[in-house]
Length: 526
Image 1 (cartoon, rainbow, N blue to C red):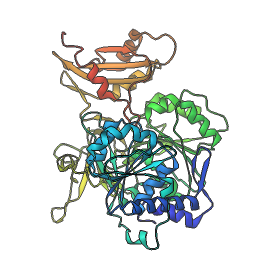
Image 2: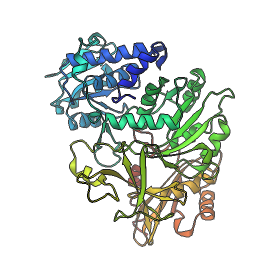
Image 3: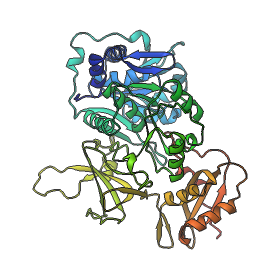
Image 4: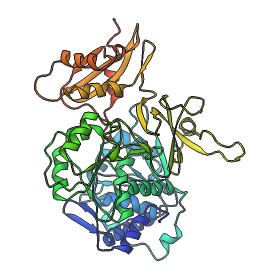
């Protein structure tokens, strides 16, 4: 088993050099060609003077150069920083400065947008530009064409930069719906262990064709590449505009594996899927999947096994629900993935009893190295694992997720809500997920978002925003459905129907915090 993340590609190239590895539109690379592209990228980075553990940022839409640059960076002993292509210039500039990026790989169009903020990135020395277009002159920075820089490294150059599995491999920035994003530092060991675990329970083989829909800056999106390259499968890149583009790609590319987040699954579940669809498995992470959407997907794509999963960037993936358990427990997030232990604990670190809500704590090989250059936030989230033997001289750190869950008698976990998202109303603690689930169960809404806002009497009141599924829906009908399905203290104090999709953060999740800000003064005069 490879120890380093880029060795996935090189090992698959040795086993099956002619097998299709990466597809992007009309461009198709077999594993031999992909390995050569990674070596060429590593050679370009070495020529730019990149040193061990220095950071290489990649600010591109999903394309072959993006993949080559990321894995080429680790092959050269450096650390890759995938930047979400949806981010604006100021956000990108913050990331480049925060982790002292030395080399940036981008396109001429994106570079033009970034030019005003690059003066705040003093460590940036080289920018490689993909594609055609004139190269601008930037003070103190070498701006070079990416294609012309692709040269295989000299003999022994990569061997001299070889890392060990405990070394840094990547820094992934969380979306940061409030405040500045945090850079989660992942080691080779973290990424290799995650890929091995996920590929194992999804039973991914070299015959699979996996559609890469999610951003590569998102650990869940990056997983589509790592599990593909580990097993010798084919990764198909897509930058979709509409959900129907995904359905078309699934059919044309004979896709067998598809991953998405709940808002996208809600849209996909309402589309017509071809009867000859070859999808073998579907996965969900990034939030709780409404039970109604689970049922709709299973009806629309009956030949695909649906895996409900839970993860967080700080530990990649924590749990999954085997598809055969869906009928018995459709609202469960499953049990711990292989090579991880998931605990449910009280604030003092003692284990919760079955059914008792507590914080999810993840321990094992997937626990990240902390937040880049932020010891205070690292100390908040990465804390000693519960139940350690005091005789051990070195403390094992676990990730304290900040999510409230419960575990049943058989060890299956159920998501309740983010600790910082929980709504506190008249002494009760209410999960927004439960309110949203009731709205979806009504059959009236396509999307729903619940959150708490200040209330002078109750402490907080519940606001429910919804996008109607179809036809004429009255908010009074939705409120009556909530009253029928929820206890009185969980019934929203304000219900509104809104047009169009909700705002999303760069990873595709509903930006509940942004919505909350817009309604923060709703009950001031109550």
